[in-house]
Each structure stands twice: as C-alpha cells, then as structure tokens.
Image 1: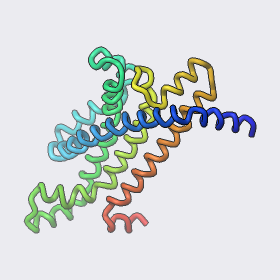
Image 2: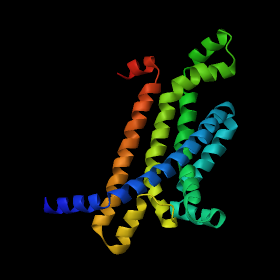
Image 3: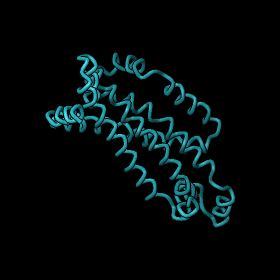
Image 4: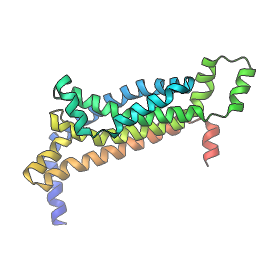
Length: 218
C-alpha cells in the first residue's frame, strides 16, 4: 500500500501537467482518426465498385502498416519538420488499413438478394449504397474505426519523440531518468484513455447498428 500511495501522490502532484498532456494526446489522435475516416471510408466504397483497384489500395495500406513507426517518422520529418504535423500524418497513415478493409468487407458481404430486391424496386446504385449497403455494413465499418482509434492512442505516445506532446512525453522522460513513477504517470492515463475511447466507440457502434442486426446478434 505504501508504494501505491507513493505513485498516487506522485500523479496528484502532476495532475495539471497530466491533464494538459492528455488534452494534447486526445487532439492528435482525434484529428488523425477523423481524417483517416474521411479518406478510408470513401476508398473502401470505391474498391467495392472497382474490384481491380482493391488489391492495389489494400496492398499500399498494408505496406504502410508494415513500415516501423520510427522509420515512417524518419521519412516524414525532412518533409514536415518536427512537432504535431508529422505525428498526425503518421497516425493517419496507420489508421487507414483497418477502416479500408472493414468498409470493403462490410459492403461486399451485404446479401445480394437484398440488393437485387432494391434494384427491383427501382433504386439507383447511389440509393442502394446510402439506404441499404452502408446501414447494413455500419457495424463492420465501426469495428474498423474502433481498431484504428485504439491503435492510434497507443501510437500517439511516439509523438513525444519529435516534440508533438502527449502522454508519451512523461513516459520518455521517465525512461531517460530511469524513473518508474514518471513512466507510470504517463502510461496509466494513456491506458485509461484507450479504454475510454474503446467504450465510447462501442456505444456509438451499438447506436448506429440497425435494430434487425442487433436482434440477430443476441
């Protein structure tokens, strides 16, 4: 209990700094994931329409995902400098693959009989996409967004290496000082933030899931 109380006291003494760095962490993650959604969802829709492009788009996203994050930052720094810009771009690039793949998978797996019924009713391709395919694919798309967002929270800790701020700043400072209390002070809020993001997106996923699909999951 003595060690635990020491850690708690250490964190309470730095609560203002923790709040400031948490806000920076949320900002970097939020901006990157929002841009990833705005790019990846249309790309996922595009490759369902043009199957030949699917392999190229997913292959490029896979290649980016396979590139070590520090190496990617190394490529971005000469172009964008240091600070938040290269960090946001790095997180954005890593967030693309799960959303693209899940958008493509969700749309491709919509029952063909439902689509044929829609066409039989005179619906255009755009109406089918907007009123049938996207609502039915939303649970799968949201699962991809959840994966991207949770991964992005962890990746944002690396942003501290190039002066972008965030909770990683406390972690790396603790490593350089060989100070476990400082490491925990950064790691615990980052872990809590990850769980909170996942919980919020889980609620959102349930909210946008069509009622028929909700019932079928039970």
